Amino acid sequence: MFRAEPGKGPPLCGLCDTFQRLIPLGLRTVHPVLAANHRAFKKVDHDQPLDQCLFTVLDTELTGLNTDRGEIVAIGAVRLEGLTIRAEQTFSRLVKPRRALPKASTLIHRITPALVNNAAELAEVLPEFVEFLNGTLVVGHHVGLDMNFLNKACRKILGGKLSNPCLDTMRMAQIYRAEQWENYYDRYDLKVSYSLADLSAEFSLPRFPAHNALGDAMQTAYLFLYLVRKLKDGGIVTLRDLFNAGRSWRWYF
Image (cartoon, rainbow, N blue to C red; front, side):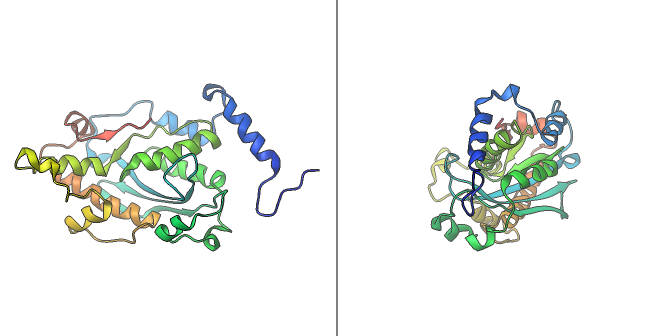
């Protein structure tokens, strides 16, 4: 009989993960919650007004920025409907990582081993989160980083990657600022910052705890709403407008 070491999964779990990765994506069994995600985005109505879209603004806390070594230790998200924050519709979970928490990451997000020791593992949290995402467009600040980690986990745990179109508030802020440049050289101003904290301070937005998944999701939601309203003044009112104006979403899938 195999015996698992304390705090570690059964030895066969690693072998199962290895075999799963060897199976081509097209032949893997797709989890029902992910299949529903794929069905929801077979078609996207580009002419839908932004104020009629459902958005989920998300953020993750990580142990590192490299998807080969880093892990998700927290997920936070909030729903937007009618360009209004639905504070009663949030998602907030700590996630127990497989490896020990690096001290460097703890110094940033203040998530300690004691906080995650009794947390659920990602295999348990991820289906719940995908269900929360289903049917909504995803918004994030530098959202590609979050989606790289989430999609890697989805491929491994759920048998495929997410289909939600994504909008990046960092990219939106860059385009909004570009419209305000007075001359060619403004684009090379090294003092300009696109960090979530600096943009929120510049635009006098309400402030939430930084490097907290739900707090950063709320902060990003306020930034997104601010930018959408500013871009609306330039005639950007639908998803197609965003796309055609080059202000848009980035498709990370």
